[in-house]
Image 1 (cartoon, helix red, strand yellow):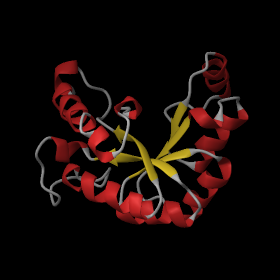
Image 2 (tube, one colour):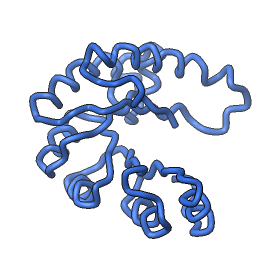
Image 3 (tube, one colour):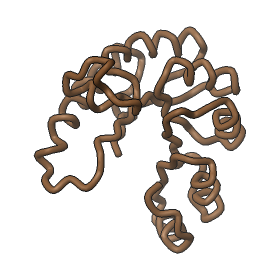
Image 4 (tube, helix red, strand yellow):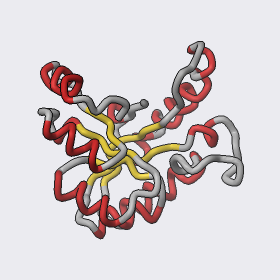
Length: 166
């Protein structure tokens, strides 16, 4: 979450806007200032069992970015989640070149299968493209590749209307 200021969160809540948060503190700030839990998505790297358990208890959806997070989500009692796709992998980077943020695009099918086997429904996809772009043309290749993957979502038992970017 880029702005945890109470006045900003209250204004967003009044407009019915949700929040994408990356810490339990930001999640709690959003809840405390009126943002509905159903409109909050938690997306962070390295999310461990303590955080996953707290998210399930709070009723906040997570975007998961590893096989261990998928199995940890189920172990915490989670049944629905999103998957975060690694941006560099969408642009052709191999797993060794991609950064730590999200699953490699080539792993999507395997993670959806793993989730299904763990009784976790994958409800959507997430991507972190970046920030402070001086031109939209710099982000469009990643977004185009992301939405091409999202078009495969029905074949994976997902709804493409759930695909989101931030």
